[in-house]
Image (tube, rainbow, N blue to C red):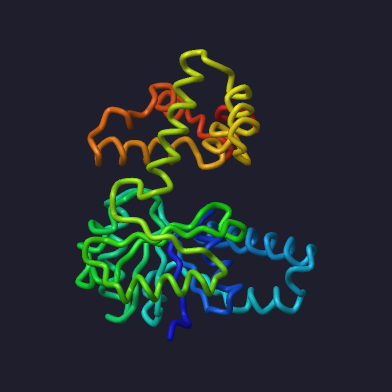
Length: 281
């Protein structure tokens, strides 16, 4: 029985993942090396739950119970008794492999280890442990409390039983699990990032302004937000990291990140989080 969930990384994705598990009745331990990140995560979760209460989707008592199930810690050692762990740190293969190596030692041998990576090889992460059959990708979408898709990635050694347990868990959270194979970018980013990249090339080549490009995709293709607004929301540095994974992993020039994207990231124009990307915030 899965009762205690570990979540590593208190950024945007980590705090959203921690919130949905706590809302679904699980005990959650949110771990981050930086205490200020944990404090900010708790404040963000507070605010998100307050919105649910306002809309009548949660009672005040429910909200208090959710917060009561959530504890924070600055050491991975606090995950020793976790049944299931979701890693949601930066999109960096070496950093993730180091975490998986540590988790393999700290957690019980039967604990399942999942990564919220949006593009890094699950096979590579599983190989950093002695339990690759219990390692999978569980890629949530941002904002986690509102988006229903979870991309489930099966590594080379991931067992059918692990995939089943993880998929059932996603359904318990009210999410829709969709399985993808362990190829660079999986399904979501293999299709999304080339579209965003092409939109950036269109800006660079003067085909249209960011506003024009986003309006065409919203009104012409019925996308809820245009690709450049979405890129700013995701973070241009994250988009660049994923495109690099696609380009290196698949070796096809069609995934080459647009020079304008590289330039904007180098200039610190990362989108919404830095106050400036294709738009000013």
